[in-house]
Amino acid sequence: MPRYRLLIEYDGTGYAGWQRQDGPASVQGAVEAAIKGFCGEEVGIRGAGRTDAGVHARGQVAHVDLARDWPADTVRDAVNAHLGMARERVAVLAAEQVADDFDARFSATKRHYLYRYICRRAPLVLERDRAWWLSRPLDASAMHDAAQALVGKHDFTTFRSVHCQSRSPVKTLDRLDVTVNQEDGAIELRASALSFLHNQIRSFAGTLKLVGEGKWSRADVEAALEARDRSACGPVAPPGGLYFMRVDY
View: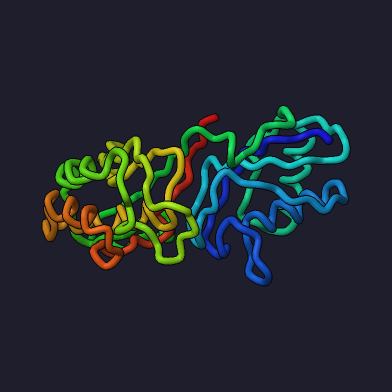
């Protein structure tokens, strides 16, 4: 059976997340239904990451095995046609046939995420559910400096959801940068690692917001990390500001 790698973009608003569920709409379920509509096959696709409800993706990767050897462009276009007919907010940006041992999840070497804050007095209209709206400015430089205390290999229990299913809270964070987008003024938090804990990036984003507001210092972030206690975490940031950007293989 030929295996296909799919590069997927989606607006997570209104979905219960990536993972297929009984009842609520999911991104995985939408793509699987579109594949069935295209070729009549009941398939299960595996994604590189399980994004939460309301989280978006510009570069989610999944793989699927199909019975027939279809041209990759046909897979992309046919799946998109069925996603469009179903009015899903999901698109397959690219499809390619890959080796049988490729696994969207386990072949990954690094995952990259973006979190966006928009600070202005007026509420968001065009970017509602696309960023965390804050009516007061944040100090991006202070946030970036505090974020560096989290880079490296640590026990991230403080920044881990109580519902996290990972076997260990120990992860290696390769990058956590806070910058200002010079085009639109949005503050951008970019995180890179092999893998992340449940709610880890949104926990970082909420904690670093406190630093940007001047309520916490870098020392407070370091203390929260060392506490290894979920109650020491700042607020969990809203899901709409988070984007799954890219996967390295």
